[in-house]
Image (cartoon, rainbow, N blue to C red; front, side, top):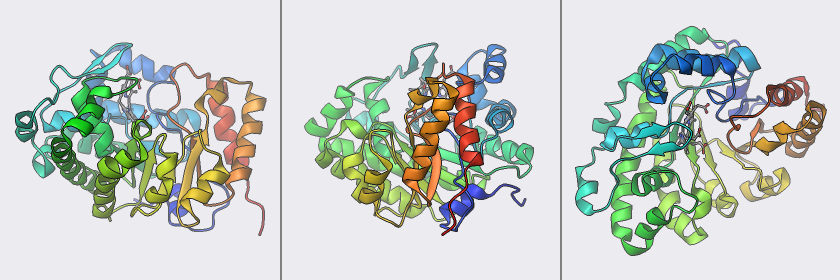
Length: 345
Ligand code: CP3
């Protein structure tokens, strides 16, 4: 089906556009009362993720309510560890928990990988199909995956953590095991995102949410090579790499086979551009906490951000929107971008 609003896709192809497209990381779920209403009827988060009709419904909610230029499939990065054999629980108000974690070589050898693992995620592919059908071409649909290092961090740590020191310990104590695990995760996410593209995702974003806890040397050894392999394997659709906190690795990330690079709010647009170079499209990067400010202040900050990025930009926050963000702030952000026009050259 032809897209009525293809601004995001024209932008990632590097075409000259009238204004940047805008969407928010974590826009599906979290902030909308409509989402909470659906959620309350269900047993929990996983039921929503695993029921394609409902996942499609909450994916489309922000397109209706916020008027953003893209939808992102309601799902989670943790479906990958689960498909590989480590199931997760989503504990209310606390976050993810893995009853079993990776401790030894045997644990790693037991994991499924590649197409065998990705083949267990039929509910995700079905959710993409239903979403595409119900979106009826209004906006592009973004599919995503956790990056290998970030997924490994959860599989070894077993839950969220400030330091992920268990996961990092493996990198120092048993680097060969870490590489074996990262290799299996990479084969799985390659099969997974290819399948997502086949089932209607128009763009893939890799979230390396825990990039920033690694040293530059560790990032170069344990994250970049796997991201490189994953990016090079995906030729079906454009790819965005968002490595949170990895400002130090931006020149390396800029050399990956991807079209766009996400920036968090710890780096200025100018500094981001100088590290990434001219070629890639940049995405980001307003501090999500800015949306707590008065709407006029949000608009002012958003305009300043747009000016600083200039063209070749996808407007977004520097990380996911927080659950208690006032909707007025979100509207001010989105509407400011939508009213903006690039200056004539
Ligand atoms: O972007 C979107 O709106 C699409 C949906 C989406 C979710 N998770 C739904 C979700 C996406 C893209 C994710 C990615 C994700 N999940 C990441 C990478 C992005 C990032 O924020 O860095 C990570 C690290 C996770 C793991 C995860 N899932 C955590 C740590 C938590 C608990 C805390 C939180 O973020 O709310 C989740 C749960 C989760 N995933 C919720 C949603 C809407 C909240 C669950 C609920 O409704 O109770």
